[in-house]
Amino acid sequence: MITYISHGNSGSVRSRFGAFMNRKDRMFRKSVLFLFSMFLASGISMPVYAALPVDSLLQPLQPPEIGSYILKETGSSKVFMVKDSEKTIQPASLTKILTSIIALESGQLDDEVVITKEATMVEPSKAGFKPGERILLRDLVKAAMVSSSNDAAFAIGIHLEGSVPRFVRKMNRKARDIGMRHSVFTNPAGFDKRVYAGNVSTAEDLVKLTEYAIRNRKFNEIASLESVLVTERSSNKIYLLKTHNKLLGKYPYAVGIKTGFTRSAGKCLIARAKKENKDMLLVLLDAKGDRWSIAEQMFESAFTPPFQAYQ
Image (cartoon, rainbow, N blue to C red; front, side, top):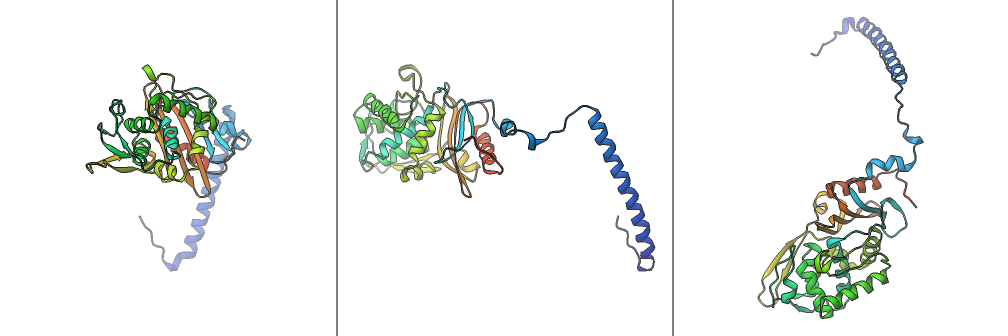
């Protein structure tokens, strides 16, 4: 209800209103003091965040359901969050980053790759290429990175080195050159059971791999795509391939890079995000929770000052 005050008695009304508010103010302050004294008497300590170390403040943001992770500033030594970064874990399709960068550096991106039967005899995810189809090598890289196509990854390896075992040897040489000390790769796609058991890496190694890969302009362009059209060269058949990386549509600062999943590896993610003058890289391995929400929360924590990095 709105009460209108006439000008004839406005002075007396203001006086009574002021006295009323003074009494209310005194009553409010007394109530606050009483509640505060009761709070202290209860023995419950008030949180004094300024007195806590950085580690204590970050603890709620370090989810225990992630097997291993690193959040760092791209291209620097600044690490914001880290857990078991040298723990050996299956990287699943994050392996395709190595496969893709080898292809991008091959100088053969305009090659027409004939899809072999061996390349098509893989588990999903796959683009669905048929034996005998002809796909440009650059488009196979897009398929491997964007839609995590296992047939594309195998086709890359077979084309570049003649066989999967020979390409795997090249992968492991490249990994050592990059400085990946705790990684062993058994195939181009990231399978980790039966004949491909033993395909392993660490969050620390995968950071090295990703920071190496993002020096390549073509890699960055491909890693940020949400979908890609791949043309079969003989028939002009079109494959529409879409990303599995939900962070690209969910988080406005995300710029890629790669997802992964197997039963052994769990949910994996390498993500990059840029906000204002900050460029962050996140590796999550063996995630039990919602990796997209966790990644967004961790990025926002790093982007929001004050946030001290572990040097």
